[in-house]
Length: 115
Length: 114
Image (cartoon, rainbow over the protein chains, first blue to last red):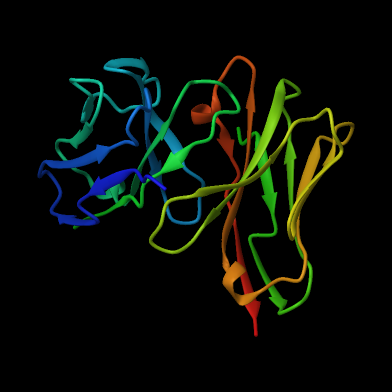
């Protein structure tokens, strides 16, 4: 079965540095999501793309976070500058369509540690 | 305001036993309730899901029970196996949202002892 690819798997950075995460969704999936998952909690949606367009970034801390999906395929999430509180797992997911019962396919995530 | 409350936070079950995880929701607009399974170092994977027009859905050893009037739903894992040891998340979404905007519970860490 096709998988959502994410890299890097782990990232350690110092506060105030910039970090970037990459996601390649399953081929043909128009909808892409970035989540933040804090240890002991469920995933929290940061941003949602439909093709190359952002359809929901209401939970994205826009002063330091940015996301793009320029050609409607792979996507990059950036944090600049990183803060201690940003330490978390960053998950990418994709789905074929945007319906409420669409199956989400998650990647294995990037574990970020900010020192 | 947490709209989906999940319990227990952790659960230890003997091999062959029944694991039960409960979720309660507040938003009556929710009408799709998936459960996700997450192994360490992996992203969540959809396990089973239910709509409120049925009270129970079974897939293999996994069963969702749904009580619309109580606004509660639960996951039952029959004949639990050590390979079922993982974190389980319930979620909920509504017609005016989509699966990606599901509200997730905080998860239950299940340990099945051999």
